[in-house]
Length: 117
Image (cartoon, rainbow, N blue to C red; front, side):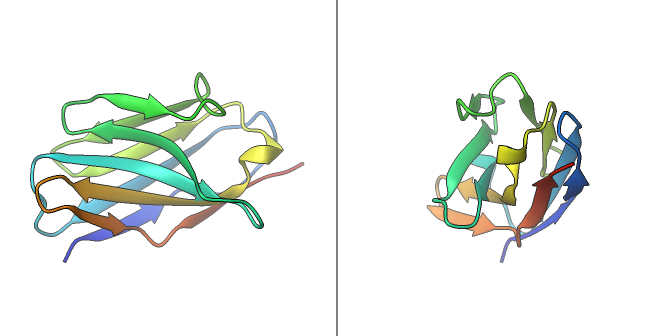
């Protein structure tokens, strides 16, 4: 099975930056999308950003121009660089990989991001 291990969450002040990392391991096909969701207490899960195996990216309107998603293809690692953080960015951030041909989505454990002064 595919495993995803996340790191980088924590407490940061408004206006600060944080970088999340997530590395997938196991048998992973080349046609895939990696990305990040977030969910705050009492809120619906929100798709934050995605990146395909050929580098196409997509961002939620709430984070565009502040967050940058990137990949290390050799390491099957996805990053989320979060800049100009706001309190409303506070949430549990979860990474995933979706393998197109297998129709299989795998999730990381989630990491807490708290933006507060």
